[in-house]
Length: 133
Image 1 (spheres, rainbow, N blue to C red):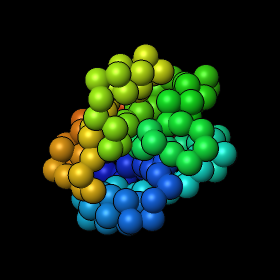
Image 2: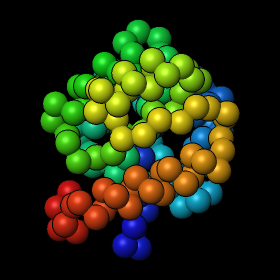
Image 3: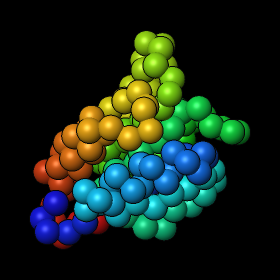
Image 4: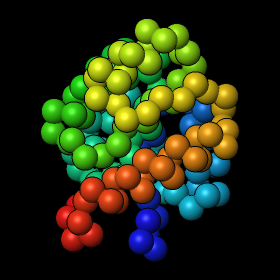
């Protein structure tokens, strides 16, 4: 992304998943900020810019779908990628209806995740002029 690190907000409540995905993404030159709750994610999203929201759907408390809808109320540009163990077609349909740009089923970390993160952050960069954050 134009010589700068892409900033990713990863919303996940399992420490092992955060650690594995963060390690893989930072190795590929992404800056990852983890949020473990709905409220923490909303606060972070409103206080600093991100190039991608990476969200687990199955969470303690509110769902990732609720978070996606909330983020879309104020941010229509930042791509949202769901990265979840839920692999049912119904789950996928719901996340796209909520405003997500992509959906991947987990293993803990995969080359597909890197490919999709790269694709979506490039897509965001193409939509946003460089002087707009």
